[in-house]
Length: 97
Image (tube, rainbow, N blue to C red; front, side, top):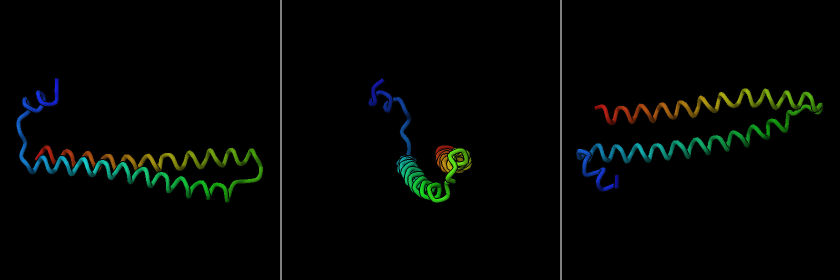
């Protein structure tokens, strides 16, 4: 179905809902950009900390990298998940008012 056909079959929404939808799209783009910036910043900091405290023994260094990865991955996943839930809640309240 073309864009024009699809929008002709949908009931028109109020201007306030349309503006709210645009705001949600902008918020989603900002949240994704913010997530990427925070991820890059934290990875830069984590890389420097790991280099600073990496043991000289190669076997200990491997375990050290594994532990850092296991700790940092869930923290970042929780951060991203909380941002996504915030966006979902805003979308739900916009369309179910």
